[in-house]
Image (cartoon, rainbow, N blue to C red):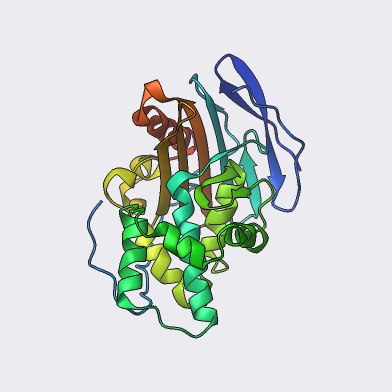
Length: 285
């Protein structure tokens, strides 16, 4: 069943779609923390989600309207109903550091599948890669995962439909907003990191800190912020554009927001886009 949504980008009105997770909607043309303890060398059990007050947290069928420069796109996944909502479903943008969540998940799952116990050094490096978005060791793990093969594995494992990888780069991975929401679901349900390491990874994503803690997490109700897992990407590239990617995963929902726009506008311009989309989708604040 399709339900039309109105999304305003610049002066253009774009049609949005609500679709089942298995359905491929028609293409839409776009004009447009707190510091936690150091990780242990064993999988950790994540904190139980806080009780959610009655009533829905989000209303993904309501319009999302903004007047911004450049491109922006969003997707909301109702995991309980297995229903995707959003705008410009087939348009992609760079993940930048957001892809580090998959790099960590893929490496941990493969370790678990091989019955190997990661060293404390490796777990600390992966933790800093997620919590602090440290880039120093990311390429090392990406290469160990098979480089472009790892991105192709993400596509097949998580059922992504628009994602495209680039050899020798995890940050240049192109994803649609709805594929970001699907990746978040894939991390949450255990397909990405495997049964042994999913809770460990989710705990790291719930403890993102510093400059990477922005976007959806900033406008969620305070009682839900601790239980929401996030990973964001942000980078001003040589193409003269800031590339912003926001991924969030909560109890029964996931959210993906992608944007790129002139570098002169700065990082905060895209951060505000992620924050404002989330705010407009929220039913309660």
